[in-house]
Length: 222
Image (tube, rainbow, N blue to C red):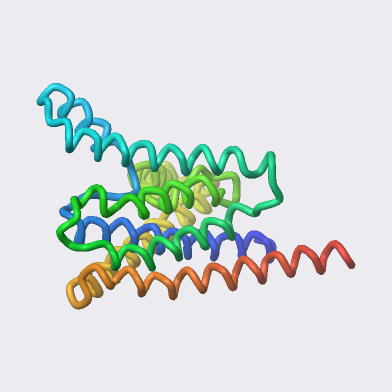
């Protein structure tokens, strides 16, 4: 593995830790709602449309709009600006974790998660997994499938060509759930203010991105 690939892998694991932290933080502090995905929200929208609960329906549709707007912005920015999405994502997430504790606890839980809906969707679209893998850093279902299938290939089918995939997805799952565990421990003590501790891995990711960019610039000059 080259230096660049090692750096990219470390950054990926760092972002998976952040994804696990923010997702678990949302679950624990805002009514058991997961801010990193929209599957349950889309189902709830259909349910509320049938159940005729307009207020909650509007809040849920708003969450969907926030999530989609982050995806749209990540698609638009690279083609019209010089903004680098990874750095922009870290800035967006930093703002989200700073704003989240300021939202009153009495606020509708889904409404209170709007900043994290935007930040997690932005992160999802901003960081591409190294090594040609398709591996999200904000949720784990596909990563679990990839890890499990690679494990079967390595240990039962004795195909060592899947060993790198096994290690990569295993490392991603481990990082994600280390972030989740940290969120559990800190949320128990600090409740909504626990989001502020996510600034530590965000700063770590920023430093690693800058180091990677410096290496690329140095290689171009050489």
